[in-house]
Length: 317
Image (cartoon, rainbow, N blue to C red; front, side, top):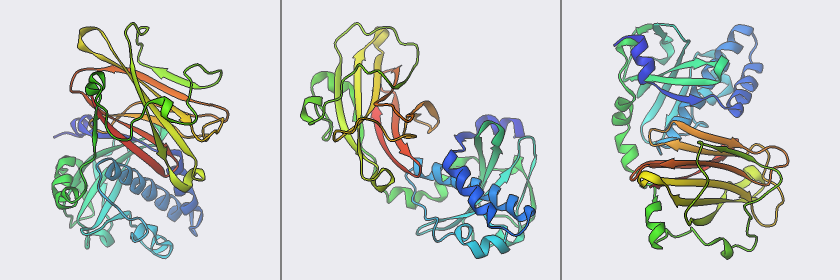
């Protein structure tokens, strides 16, 4: 497999602003510019892989990782992330166009595998190129990487031990069948409205709604990251031509708050985990909105995120 083919098959994830801030913070703690750049790159790799593991419902623990130990960071070229019950997964960086990955000798042992991450900081994105279970040399051609599925196979006992996430069947809503937790908007003490003066809206060029819709809301708690403030996720569906279903998502403040927390994101993920649509609240937005349409049996997820806190809801049309 060529490097070009690897990049085509790779999973692309964003390099988030919180990840950049943490990487810069760790870099500033280093005594030399060389070690600062090494730590910055390693930290970005670790946080991108952590996001991937989180999407796949695989637990990880940064606090017990060598890469999160300030003393070890200063002395060793490590970019590991601890997988509870399995061991340390190493995350190694390459730049666009590079054909080899470098593995420091200090990472050759006590690892359950290695994920190769291609960082493209110019476009604030990263590609997970592949996986190798072990290394015994400083350089490995990228053409020898295994697909990410090999990593999932390696971690399969961890994955199987997790609770299978609940999937909300939106087609059943048209028949009046609703998953627990999704309530009529009238059930909430502060019912959001659908016409506002300030907000962020993004859509997939949908025509105007022509048929009756069904909508439900659910309170989302992101915890202490937003001072225990709840937000409300509203999902509205309506039939479209050719058996498609239109989906409109809105995120509103709850408990009488006037505005969403600045920076909170509403993200639609494809079944693969790739980002399909995204909106982010500004300093005075009282809602953000996304809309698109999907095919019968199509799966997607909706993530509400702020800094390191996030909640994901899974749907099938």
